[in-house]
Image (cartoon, rainbow, N blue to C red; front, side, top):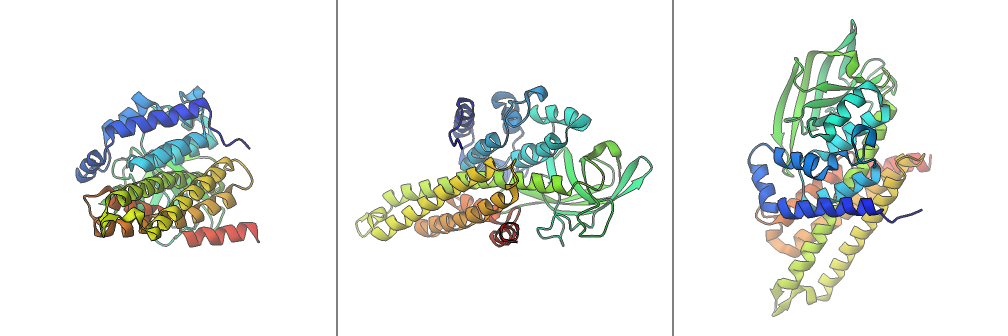
Length: 376
């Protein structure tokens, strides 16, 4: 198995890293966070027009770069390094991934608009009672003539406050937790009958509670066959999970590098704390956790199109979650009280690390899932 990136992939990484280093400073990020918009339309436009990274995983026939999961991994790691809050994960990886997997007229119409930066997708799949069970749905889409009537409530919908489209899971048949009867829809966010309650999240992003009250949608907004969408939903969630593992690697790299630099400068008892053996051991342990997270994330990404996809993703998410907790907590501890201050970047990386630990499944959830998939 070849673990080396191609020249094009290396160029993609360098391009994204250079742009973010030049324009996406911590201070600029915090201005966006405090603006109340929780995303920067100018940055998103640059992603589309200057960098072209919104087309990284899409086919050239749609105007993309002809890449795939590795390209998403590369972009997401750089997003983690810079603590980017713009919705690449929700729009390109998850929304775009669902359209790529199914194809058809809807994909042909929407994917070029994603690449151009005109479509922003929010993934409305989680429900208050559902935990991590993707089939546990109370949201219903009942047939009404040639279309559907959508009713229900979706929780913690990232980017919901400014999305142009919602990717919604709903039950078109079966009981609440049945594997069958689950459908997937991509609908305009301004559809009549949709209301939102927006709120900031602890990591500087924003999420929404979204309510559907007799929202009428056409059958052309359904992705895939009616009632058979659960395997597709599981696939795009696995792809999204692998992508946030890559983001986590970027976050963890910065936590380690920032803490190492601080240990070289902070003096106690007349010398840098990095000269104390206990701190050196801790920094080495952090480095090892980061490198193991990077390796297992690459492994999971390479297996996204294989029969081992689910077990590989769960193995990665559980390992990465532990690595984030270790690096984050030790970064804060070595920095001392300033490690959790709003003025210092390390505290914000720690917050994002904490959110990633539970996004798309906690460590315990993925350990249980891995055990079920491999042992059972």
